[in-house]
Length: 450
Image (cartoon, rainbow, N blue to C red; front, top):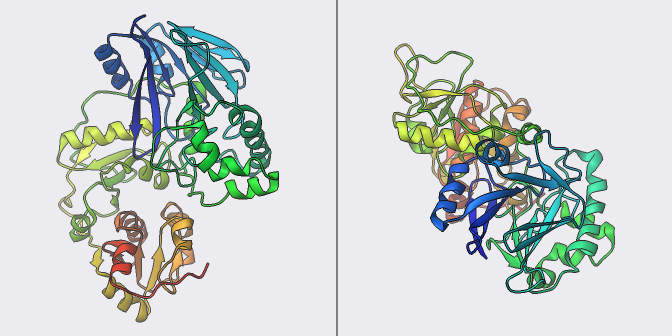
C-alpha cells in the first residue's frame, strides 16, 4: 500500500492518493479540482484511479470527484447523509468497500458537518486489522474541525455530535492507527492546527487537548472547541452549495490580455505591498500572489464577481486563475497591466515603519489591527481598533470619517489588502510595513487588553 499526500498550504487542505500497486489500482480521498495532479501521480505510480471518497461536503474548496468522474469511469463514495446531487454511492455506517486488496470501512463521524464520515483502511495483504484512518475533520493534528460553519442554530447540535464522535467512534481505535486528516495548518476550518500533516491515534489521545476534553464534561468540551477560531471566509457557503451539486473541471484555456476594464469588474493586484503602495490603479485590491491568494480573494470579494488580475506576466495570471478555480471563482475575465491606464489617476498607499506608525497614532491617526482574534488576544498596539481583514469592508463605517487610518497585521500583507479596501471607499490610509512583527522588534508598547 502506498499513500501520497497532496497539501495546499494556502487552503490548509490535504488530499490523498492511496494505491495498491500490485493490483494496479488506487483511490482518492477528498480530492480538489486540480484533477490533473492526481492523474499525473497515478501515471507515475503505474496505477489506475477507480474510486474517490468524500468525507463531507466541503466549504473551503471545490471537490474534484465530480470532475474526475466526468472523465473516467470511477465510483464516488460518500456517507448516506451527504445528499450529493450527482452520481455516487452512499454508504451507511460500517459499510465496506474493496479496492484491490485494500479494505475501506465507512465510519459515521458527524460533528464538523452532519453528513461527515471517516474511512478506516486495512491492507489485507498484511492483516485484517485497520492501519489507517482518513479522518476528514473528525480528528486533526492537535485539533478537530470547527462545528459552526452551518450557522449558530446547528452549532450546538454539531458540537454534541463531535463530542460523541470522538468518544465513541474515533478514540476507541487502536493507538497504532495512522491518521491522515483533510484539514491542516492554514485551514479556516479549524483553530490553530499543529504543523505535522499526519499523526497517530495514540499520539492524539495523549497530546491533543480537544481529544482529552472529550473525556470530560460536554460543557467543557464545547467551550474548548470554540476558542481561537478564525473568521470563516465569506465564500464558504457558496462552495458548499457547489459541492452538493458537483463541479465540472476548471477551464484550462489561457487568459486573454485585457486593455479596457469595465467598471463592474474587480481589479486584483498581486504585487508585494511596497510595490503596490508606490503606485496602482484606482479601485485595485492588493491580494499578494502567495499561497493564501485564493482564500484572501474569497474572504473579501463577493462570490461570483467578475475579476481581472493586474499583472503583465501571463503565466502568473494563469497560475492565480487556477488557485481561484479551486475555491469556485471561475469568472476571471483576463489579465491587465497594473499601471494606471491613460486618464486614470495613480493611487498610492504610504508604507510606514513601526515608529512612524506609532507617531501617527500619537498624533491622532487610527490604528486598525486586521489580524484574527487569537492574534489580537496575544498582544496588540495600544489604542488600536480590531477589525479582522475579512470584515473591513462591512465594518468600515465604524471608523470615524475625516481621520487618517494606519492598518497593520502580522507581517504587512493582510493589512495592505485591508488598506486597499479602505482606500477604494475613499479613506486616507497607510500600511504598517512589517506589521506587528516590526512593532514588537521596535520594542514599542504592547497592550494585552481584550
